[in-house]
Image (cartoon, rainbow, N blue to C red; front, side):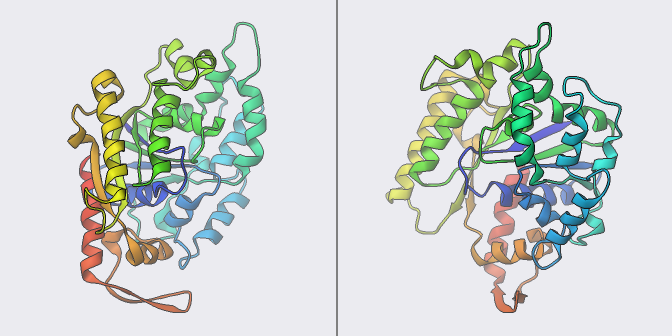
Length: 339
């Protein structure tokens, strides 16, 4: 089973839009596989996209899943874990899953979804408290960090590939998501905050260039490695939302060059944290989706199912050109080919 997490501790890098398009089109192109999508972001934007988007009632469908008993979301699954947080309860994980194709005919039948849930934010304090408890003879943090890993293990015979969308944070529920992944997709943008964020990502996940060693004994890195566990490896760095104005001599190009240089430096010093061996294998260009992306996400459609021409988005007529749609399809196909 291949397990990918889309994550960046900085918001606004296009992580969820990439996760949606990549997972949906991967499932289309690999119809022989069963794909599991896990939405570990309390905003649940990925779930709304899979369930129909703005125009297809994605929000209403998500609310319906949240109102069922048991709650058919990650929040419902976490509720089932809270009473006995350090052992795997006798539950049927399929009770928490939904099949997006039943709500959105643009999604293939081989995808199942553990939907996101704003309840995660309310649960987060309790989850963190349980993880940080001091219990002789037990490892509370590891037991809680394994909640999603446990879920995946329970359904591993039913799925071939897992896509995990995460919150742009390093909260406990984000660590729960990341500890279940084997490979990381880290979207970056050509701005200075993305340069700092990618440095933070390697520090938080792999303990590389920590700003202070005082906290290293309490780090995600040490807790997993002390338990004999593999850390998720960086598999792909999409250079997201690039524009036609971003040449190598531009300010944007300069910042992206610094990001690439930092990754190349880590490749030389800590090659074990990557699945690739050269910079060219790890980075992939993704042009800005612009209006085409807005329409696709409003309609909850992968680019492969989007049509050209006029679209009515909330009473406003919007044009999707064949040229821009082709650019978007090419960009996502380039990402999917690397998975």
